[in-house]
Length: 367
Ligand SMILES: *[C@@H]1O[C@H](CO)[C@@H](O)[C@H](O)[C@H]1NC(C)=O
Ligand SMILES: *[C@@H]1O[C@H](CO)[C@@H](O)[C@H](O)[C@H]1NC(C)=O
Ligand SMILES: CC(=O)N[C@H]1CO[C@H](CO)[C@@H](O)[C@@H]1O
Image (cartoon, rainbow, N blue to C red; front, top):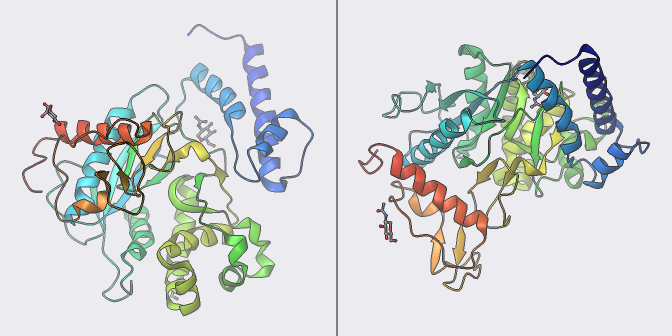
């Protein structure tokens, strides 16, 4: 790219400033209806921000300057076969997307919280950390996640200034830019995380003097792209809050398997951090039908269909892909593709799983 005139750069910089200013004002107050941009952003519903108009300019600026804001991809994992095969597929797609146009991916780490190395150390960059002391997770293994992040952030040498907290059942389907803006991390809004409807419980951990319950975002800790410096402060509180929530019977009962997601949002709110919500961050088949411009496929739900392509959710389908069918060993290579009529998101998912397993050496050798 040739030299841009200084005027153009200043113009772009100013535009970026205005755009960021509007966005930030909107996130904080959610009430400024002056401009087209803000209205459009708000149309995307309360805090669920569609930031396409904003993305345009920083990307332009970035291209002109050739600056990439790299983020480190981190996921927490165990040495169980179920965790391992998912990590291998995730890492395969990370490698494929990393250098694609538009990606701002930096390094990758599997934070292994089983306490000792396993047989994937040579295949996937891995950092071994300790599990919680026996019994502390009260049977809820996910509580190891915050503790794993605390140890990794404390001990590892991480080059990038940003972290993407991912999970083994994430597949990168498009090159993922750094979606955060300044001190606003980027996150995915989960419809089932509803802090406002759980005010009584949230208030046990997020007292009134800290601010309104609406400061607690309807998200989880993954996927999130956040400044490393912010996560370093939030992670220890996240860990403490999740342990306290687990110890409190009412909270444990109310939040169940999503407790550690609530712990993260309470911890970030306690720290004064709010997230930009990106609906496009990921899709979750079978509920989302198209990949479109999303970045991650999250295959946490079972995909069950009749041979006529009808969704039979909750009932084992004549055709199915469900990660839970493969608890003890990896899925075989070359899974059968779904019957005609099944949504594109599910077809893409199975094709991507097949591509990864076909190309990962020794897939079938029982790791
Ligand atoms: C977490 O809890 C422990 C034990 O109660 C305490 O010593 C520690 O200071 C707490 N850390 C943070 C960041 O709140
Ligand atoms: C995958 O399975 C299909 C049948 O389901 C078969 O036709 C095809 O040859 C297989 N491909 C590979 C690479 O094994
Ligand atoms: C592509 C992109 O927009 N990257 C962003 C990553 O994070 C920094 C810090 O906020 C932003 O300034 C970049 O624009």
